[in-house]
Amino acid sequence: MSDELARMDATAQAELVGSGEASPTELVEAAIDRAERVNPEINAVIHDLSGPARETAAGAVPDGPFKGVPFMLKDLGAANAGEPLHLGMKVLKEANFHAPIDTTLAQRFRAAGLITVGKTNTPELGIVATTEPKAYGATRNPWDLGRSPGGSSGGSAAAVAAGIVPMAHANDGGGSIRIPASNCGLVGLKPTRQRISEGPLVGDVMSGVTVELCVSRSVRDTARLLEAVHGPAPGDPYVAPPPSRPYTDELDDEGGGLRVGIMRRPAVEGVEVAAPCLEAVAKAAGLIESLGHEIDEGNPLDTLPAGEGGPDIEDSFLTRWAAGQAATLTQLGMLLGRPITEHDVEPLTWTMAQIGHERTSGRYLLDVGIHQGLSRVVAGWFETGYDLLLTPTMAEIAPPLGEIDTAASDPMSAFTRCLPSGAFTAIFNITGQPAVSIPLHWTADGVPVGVQLVAPFGREDLLIRIAAQLEKAAPWAERTPPVFAAAS
Image (cartoon, rainbow, N blue to C red; front, side, top):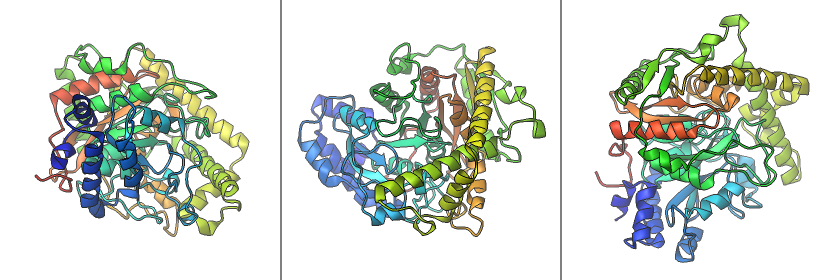
């Protein structure tokens, strides 16, 4: 049964529980078995929560849309009280730090019926686009063990791609849902800014750069989970506009007529786009047209001045990203009862925190203002008659492990090395629009290559609708990686 379950998405597994064909305990035991079989090869799961999961499965599981379905939490962001929370950090690992309270999102995951069987690996503080923390070692991509699964949700993506669980928690501050989804052949939806509450301890991270949801194997799983967990919580600093109808209603909407622009070059100067990434976009454009939609070559960059006259997206993003690390290390020092020192963290983390301390509050507000201007540019482009934007998810395919080295002699070289991975994704963290990566293409040697679709602010419905249409036109469910928790 475990082999059969490995090939099922979360919706199908929940249907087994709903029909009485399987119990939550059977689903959880099968997931634990699969983790024991394949995790030693990929190092995706770093905290074993099989004991609490068994207790939960044997009790009164909430009657939500995913009742009894095994799930993983990324070890960064959403957390259950009393469970390990190390954020990819050796200092928290050595302190045996545990989450003090439930986050709002973790509570909503439980209310949806999901049962957390483990926590997944992440780079230190989620800073880079690979998952190779010094605290827990590298996570390997199930499609090619020599390649990165991406970051910072690489552990979650590898666990889902390898069939351990059908869906796992992920979050995204510069592409950390979409990059691992592209590298691992999964669906990765970054919701609209503040669609998902980050409470109760967090209002908005880095003025709204980060969002949370999942990586999954099917569009319907992502839609059903978004439907279950979206919406504000008391005290949220601001909220996304509510959808006009349930997200799951979009799954069966086969209407055409959407106008889709294409962006083939990134907003970051000097980044070359790899041929397979452009091939993926060409393939997606053909499929979109075959579904009755219009492809138009326009994109938001058409309205921006190039070169020195344009905004410095890379450096202004660094201001917010570095400020986040500076603030986080200060907060962690308060929790641990002593300041975090250079010896407690990886060289890149320390370097970025120092940049965050050095750049003034005025510089921070100036760069946030630049990003708000970009937000208006992108929003204005959609107002000219475009419904969606198509781009490569990444400017490169999954890079080899070891190329993004946070302990290099020049630690900032790791940040620079991440630019090809995040060149098409980070701008929409800056501007707040929802975006999804879907797996429509593979290289000749079997490496997944995602494409990204971006919608206007608050319009995840359009992303789910077209992603579901593309999934039906070019199904990917039967494609599984060489490292997979089921017999071939």
